[in-house]
Length: 336
Image (tube, rainbow, N blue to C red):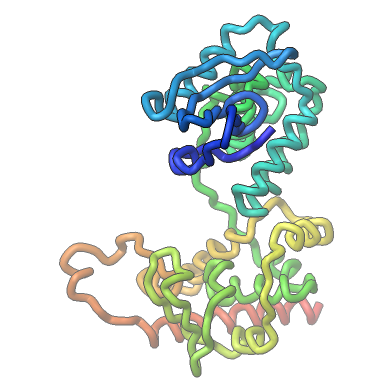
């Protein structure tokens, strides 16, 4: 069986066999059969005896329409003719295709939630088996949509569950900052300190330049697609001096959570913590937003058009105040 990810471009490029027919499957079930004459037909293979149903010829029938027709057909099958897929087999197949199509962190996230499922049969899984958090529901939706495409189930138990991520408000307290700061696992912890000292996003420190007394982030790494410059103060400069590239965030964060027992927090919460401390120190919001490279509309309308002030000196002063605050707070812990 030949497996391929089906897209319009992929279908157009499918090779024509010298003789007979060849079928290209997305998985077990839905696929495209190509004849030696060049015709391409959507098919569904089902049942223990591997029966085949034609779903229409491409491009007269679109890929989207063929997938929908395949799902409708599966819904008409009696339970005895549907593939009896185990949860374990379906899960492993899903992880394999996810690793091919997604970033490693995405697959790790899927595993975090889907490994909670304990049923033996895939068809026995219900929407209550994963919990009702937004990330768990989304993992369930994506997994069962994949299973639908393979013909392993005839419904998605998470299809009508609403996903609402809401807005996080987690800010680390001073005592929590002390615990995280004291944890030593370089280069991971060096990156954490830089995030707290500068308020930047973690991916930015994978591509930056130190320029005299500032840090330059190119537009290609910035969310707003514009170059960004942040003043470089002594504490941050000392960390950057021995900073090494790092990308194993999930594993390193898991190790930290094992050692440092504080309520659940994410790496991005350090950015919110930075902004909160800035507010506590009396930093004007437009200065904080300049450091964060935010475009929230604090300066808008005519003011936004004519105000081209860089706030560089104000940003430098704000970061200096932050370093003084953090140094005093961390030294207070040491002296106890």
